[in-house]
Length: 140
Length: 140
Image 1 (spheres, rainbow over the protein chains, first blue to last red):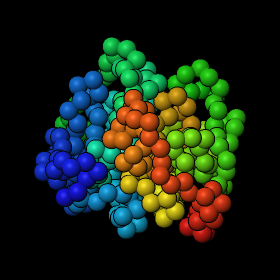
Image 2 (image 1 turned 135 degrees about the horizontal axis):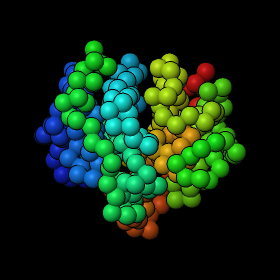
Image 3 (image 1 turned 60 degrees about the vertical axis):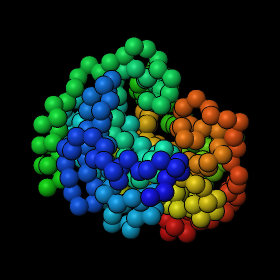
């Protein structure tokens, strides 16, 4: 499967993190991101590059999953901000980053892709089991 | 109006770029980003922080505007990838970045917030008038 780089697609070949919720169209996983507990990814099941490659109803279903992850994170971790991004420059297999941000985290006001601003850390970490339960309820 | 920083909100106090399309809920503007011609922002009219602060039908209308911008850019500029992001770490007034990306641009495979990878530039620039016309048709 082709990406912008020549590497095999890691999101076709692995789960991409611990599964919090799984549906037929996409899954929500907890990223392994030590400085950012609660960092979730919403990963499309199929290898599709862009949101506009999907039919409009599928786009909405994906976004509703992203918004459920945002809502669950806000409820359980009360971040100062949430960052949402679909980039896919390294892995052009559609996936959304849902990242809780705090004033005292490593990068604010920068992005996670910016140079670090400080030795920061998140003041709160959502419990993965609670996150999974909230997603299940929100996406039922 | 409060942001994460103490600066006044520039998206309440300015258009944020040349207007390509304007609706009651949001506007689409062309960012002034020399290395990234066609870089659009979808900016909410009201000062709201997160997507989940909006009612579900408004979230969908915003996303449909983001997807219209992506579709128009793909049609007119044929980028290798499109990046979508709602960050708001500097300006917590809901806005989406819609960024056409090319293999030979300044940052790929990094983000626009990453350290530059090369003296890159975009191989194609969409015509702003055509972009505005396409958005008008897609959002009619």
